[in-house]
Amino acid sequence: MSRRLSFIAGLGVFLTAAAGLAWAQSGAANYPDHPIRVIVAVPAGGGVDTVTRIVTAKMQTFLGQPMVVENKAGVGRSVAAEYVFTSPPDGYMLLASQPSPITTNSFLYKSLNYDPTQLMPIVIMSHVPNVILVREDFPAKTVAELIAYAKANPGKINYASQGIGTTSHTTAELFQTITHTKLVHVPYKGTAPALNDLLAGNVDLMFNELATSIELHKAGRARILAVTTRQRAAALPDIPTLEQAGVRGCVSDTWHALTAPPKTPDGVVARLNDAANKAMQDPDLLAHFKELSISPGGGTPAEMSTFVKEETRRWSDVIREAGIQPQ
Image 1 (cartoon, rainbow, N blue to C red):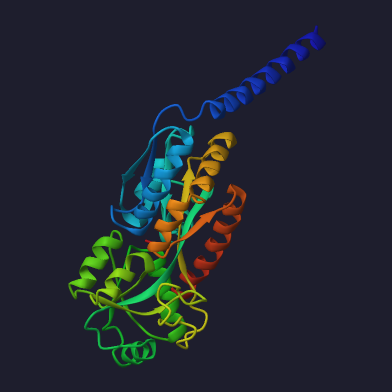
Image 2 (spheres, rainbow, N blue to C red):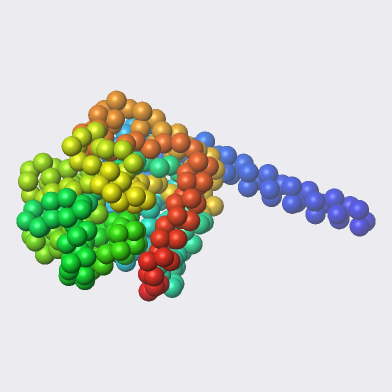
């Protein structure tokens, strides 16, 4: 009798596991069968918003269902991340973000209502060089002049960022640590409002994405002093890198990623990753990216996971060295 009961119990466990596997496979096989919502962690008009709309417009042609982009800005981009984190893991609610919600927020906030490490990586959509962008009438014309001016006026130069913990914030902190300068941080809720205040002369400078800075520079409404990547930007061959300007070790770019709620089936993640990689090989998308000085991303979820872990380690060190305290 005991052997028979053990057999029945074992069979029940097997059938339950098989049913779960069949459900996951079926879900992936039929996925998607209705529109997918993509929650962007910044207001409309920012870099990740622009990239997400370009990429998802192509992805939906491969998925056969619309991808509806929505903006949910908030403190540290956490509002969007929390919203997606607590959504059903069925592939119909995705997060599109800059690095901070999935890397540094754990080191910047004492309490988060989500665990960034549990979000499922889908793909890196793009990489964008960062630049030092100053208001049009700012006294410094070069990086050397900026550093000299900052040292002569400690605590009197302010810089805008897209928010606490964003790449624009952490890059500025890295710059200050390396150059032994002191700037005043003015955080905003996204790129667009920060740029608006820079153009109005309310802030002095910003470490910002090239994609949203280049046209302002070309129009003479603001000035780019340097790019923060190892190589010069092809679109601005006359602008030096920070290393060429004498600031070694301050290397940074902004990347934009797609993630899904924890426990999203692997088959669903693979379907989304495949559509994203196909989208980023599309000639029209590549031409559009080139116009905006954006480099396409791509790769596997596993590669993204490794990359995110490396970025988390790197920028958490910067946060600690800069003495930024969790809020």
